[in-house]
Image (cartoon, rainbow over the protein chains, first blue to last red):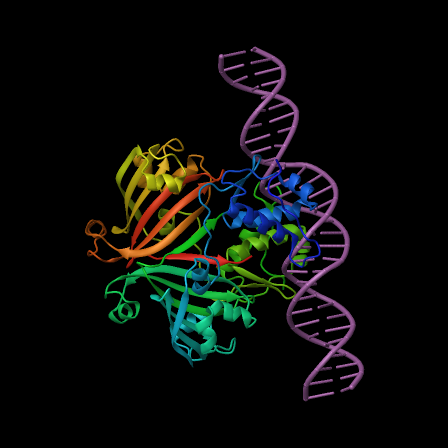
Length: 245
Length: 245
DNA sequence: GTCAATGTGTTGTCATGACATCCGCCCTCT
DNA sequence: AGAGGGCGGATGTCATGACAACACATTGAC
């Protein structure tokens, strides 16, 4: 036995390690590689694919980071047992809903540039009062209200339009605009809905809300987006995968 | 000018890349490396430390994964701007509270082996009805109730005692018992407290709770612990850092 | 029969070398 | 003054080689 069929295309601009990682991930998703199955050893894989061991290792490490497989020194590499779930990565709600087969829509409640409030200025590490986008959106899934999202972004970094926001997720717009978001610090909590919030979300006052504040940083380590989001606790939950190196 | 003083000990069993990563992380925490500061290039570092470039690269990648620094091809490596926060990794609430300077305590409500409920059996990927530990703990911070945690673990994997659970976090006990936990899939949500839950936590019925279910896997890809936790929304929040590779 | 030593295969770590790709700067040409 | 090209420097990718550390199975001695 030699595992799933994997072939690399050396003429492709896609890095070899990434090609390998993607094909393994796909094989796991398809069930071609069942939970608990052992992968070939790094040396075998390197030989079979015509790659060097570091390249194969990089591919496998990528999957370990995503929580798909597990390695044991001296033993081998196995697919994680149990159902494989996808971690929320750095995607927007819009994309997550699409992937889950639901129909996202967005109502933009506010889109304007304003002087930066001091709390946001601290988070974004910009001077208080400097010009920032302020954005408030009510998000729906299959027509049902799901979340209220409030975002702030330095005004000089991106150009936002109402049309784009109604059709796409914020992160997709930012990436399309050349912004390269690399990571985010998030804080997740729960609190009761105010009357106004409840009304927007179709809940009762005091209903449990899942809250998330997120500050995303780019390429240059600059904080480029700060968001305060509330989700209906009855309708939404976050999924996170933690993997040690 | 050549960055913080970093020295590696080749006689130490700690991997070189890890020594380097830890010392950089410490320098950032101390403020020795300020947000936005550029690190020396990989080649310079390799030369200065007497290491090869792959080793230096591995150290830096480690910090990128933790969200401490950011790399830009063709430009260099910078410390992330803004305050550096620590991500919750694979630690228990007990350790988190200790680090935050608070005084954790635990009241064990239940500790017994029981036939595995079917929902838990699915999560742990064990036969329904097989023997598992069932554990329910009320956690306090500085004497105030903070969370109720319910856990299930395959009975044959670990030995649990009441004394140990009152003094240490679950994960510390598991690791001390030779279990090597590598990652976890988590789902985070919010809901209203039932009357019983509210009473335990000193809240009112309907109070917002932060919920987390977590399934942790070990070395071998086996799911070894399943937990369903509820936290007082007014007292606790989770912090998560996401970083792309 | 039990236990210890040994052997084999695997992942973990580290070194060296090379080329690709991208960014930003400077210089030149228009 | 502006646009474009060239160049240096940085990270990204990939190859080859070597040894270490660990787990497990086998073998051997007692």
